[in-house]
Image (cartoon, rainbow, N blue to C red; front, side, top):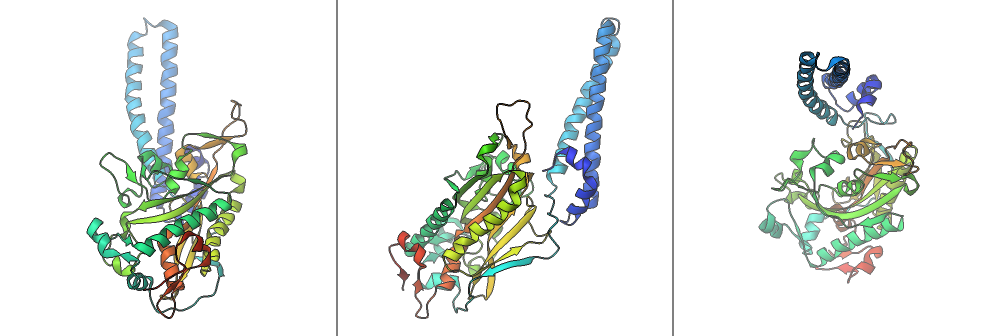
Length: 408
């Protein structure tokens, strides 16, 4: 989100940068025109109120007819203003975040880690062979796009959640356990609404199932003024997440890569403006350290300016190696949103909360997956399959499990 003042003062630069993200020039021009129309209406109302006050001061009784006319004009302008405010808000809300100047039109591999191998069986085949998951049970309960983790599969799944949270906590992130039903205002704050409403599951009472715990973690501080000395604030949580996008035919063939319901451990940071890009780099290291601890090969990709999420100014994807497919797959996206989300969620900070003369600032907000649990589960199955058909378990997970290998 942008302030109207920012758009007016930086329109040429904003227009140039947002066109790189696919924003249409006519839409951008319309947005500026709408802001100018809004400002004009606001000024007309100020002028008429001034006129009315002067008429009252001069001779309220003698100027009664003219004062009544001014009141009628004000009522008409107030209705127009209300309508124009909504039009302008909708136009501005539809603008994505401005891409960072370091980005290009091509994704760039920043670094890779680990030794890639080739293995014969896909994670879906392994899971079926070792009775770790069941799509049939998922379909019986909820329809296509859902899976049931079974017995040792369920235990391994739970271990991955605990492991990712514990590793995040060791790096200074404070854990939260969160609700998964969200108010529309919460999703507006993180920019999932209104643009992506069709991808969300909505309840009959107007709430939404969470698409990512980023939404909950950010909105913990919605409409609040934070104390600057407490920044950076680093939070982590694991939640069940829900998205409609997984429901295409062939979901079962894709294994557990794309599901309607999935688990994700998230990290979120609130920081001062000057620190956010340094925090971004550290969050990428924090998320990728989980893969290193599990000895899973990966690469970090800086996304192109037209390939990022709506709220991001710069994003790194972390992609883990899937040896049966001989390809990397995304397992995390880590993004800097600058003050795009804090403006929408009205999150601010001050050096001194008691100083009424100090102007509050908007912190920069960053988020990242650390990691997507279902994909992490799948990556372990493919990378740790053994020639005899068994599955060895990475040593860091042993303390969470009642077994060190899985055999049929």
